[in-house]
Image (tube, rainbow, N blue to C red; front, side, top):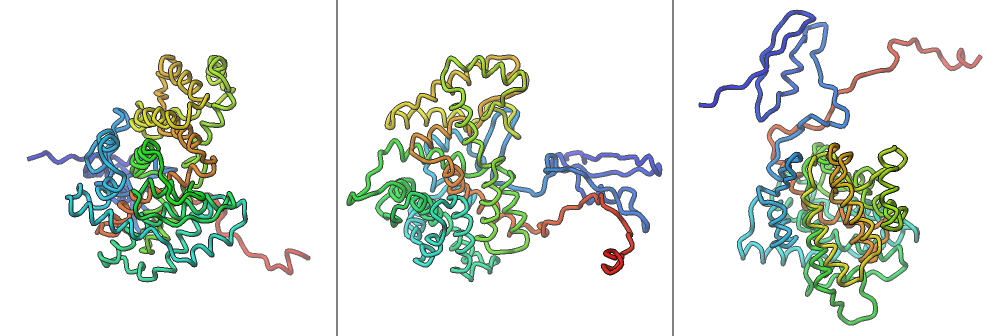
Length: 431
């Protein structure tokens, strides 16, 4: 029998001691709240801005070991999934917790393929945006609008209704993303093609012009498949936390995912690969890399695409994306910035300044180069992130709905304002 693990805490204010249970390397915040609690005083609370060391949920979706550079979906290494799986198979794994049988897979792909069309009134909604509207703003608004087209989605306790919304969201997200892209270019919206795979269909809706049938290069659709798999989930990041927090009010999944899209919209979350591109363009050539490195060390420059909030080792996704970059450039031609990126990576991985600080390339370092090679403007990068992340958000949302311990999100605060001021009526204040 495993020995019970506990933490003994002594409150030096009172001399009282408390024994707190340790489970899975954590103590319960509610147990901390018992320390010093009395009729006159509240118990202790934990102050943790950004939730850097606070577990808000139990989850079986994604495992990360940042120190060893490990990322797993439902226990499967990301390297194996990116090499041998498809995005829709990975999406099934995330949602259902296990890999599909052939029959389950075929039904899953069929359901998603035949739900890619959106209501024509959504097209009207999107056409109402200005010509220069940001694609993420359009995606955010259109996903939120879907909740009004499927009012039954509010019944989140019904498993069948939940499943229908999950299929709809995964299916329709590429359509909405592609239409936001076309809108910015003033091009007509392209309807889904049910003869194509998930990523092929997305490329068709993005780039089809006057041709009868769009046939994407298989190397490009494969590279996009890999990128979608790598971005499908990443544990309790900012956008996932937003989905869970808003979802804890038991709102419909469209509204909950809109919160995730809004969080991803922020430059600190989804915009990092755009910052990498700006950095590489500022460096310009391989010969300028040493001077840039010195600027970073002196605090005059910022090294973008290196280091990660979670990973203290080489981001496993970065290695896979680097290979995908090579495949894309076989089709599109080599971006001269690739040479800059490779030289920057080479020096940073050998330089003690960066090695000692565990600044390794992350997923954003090469992904921006791929997106640019595919002719995406920087404002589309976060849309390309949101489409695959939908599967992860939904898997996390499902856990939330079924979690018996889940409560509506309501963090504590430390009040820092004035207290017990006397109100002076306006007639006296202004006289």
